[in-house]
Image (cartoon, rainbow, N blue to C red):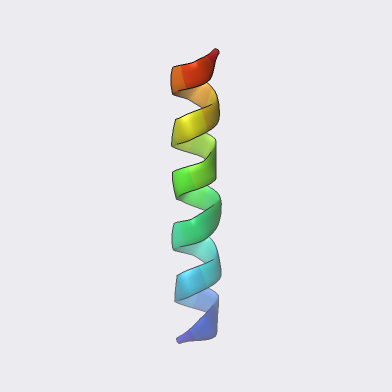
Length: 21
């Protein structure tokens, strides 16, 4: 379950980075 949370967090961060850039 923790793995899923980490993946979601990384994915969200990646999207935010893409939007900013």
